[in-house]
Length: 180
Image 1 (cartoon, helix red, strand yellow):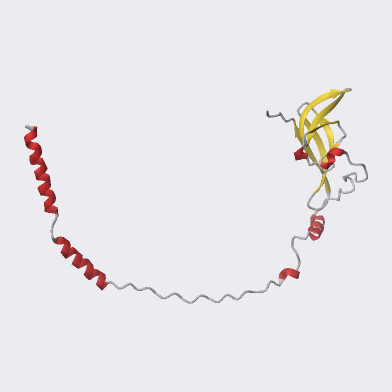
Image 2 (cartoon, rainbow, N blue to C red):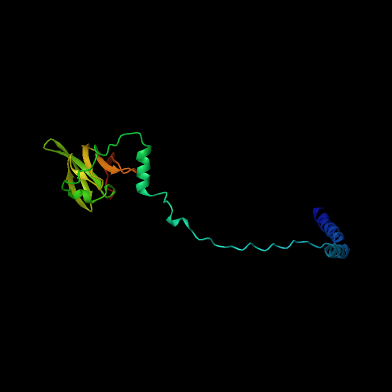
């Protein structure tokens, strides 16, 4: 019975679809052409661009706002604190140690030990191993070792701030594990 209704159903669908195809297409296309002919777009013309005239920079000889000398003077004038530059300063006359030629970020602490009752840190720079003790100097900023523990080396650096004053800064080198 199903076989009998299946072809009838296909015929009914085909008849329904053929009814959708009509000749109304021509009338619709004619109406679209009429509407297109009646509509006239209006676009206002673009105004002429303004002429650019370059100006010469005349402020090159004027006051420079980021001059370090004037900035330092202004900071000192605005500061109510007494100057401490005489209290903290690097020892410029002493002989530099070999590890003062390298920045701290190029150094790595790789170990520590106790020798003659004093802590000693093992520091590598450029694939060379150095033994350093409390009181030795490291780095480019007049860093002096103040403490050595099993896992870190602490030092006091003397650097200049924005006003040109010498200030102390604490830095550390942490024990680095070797990656194989």
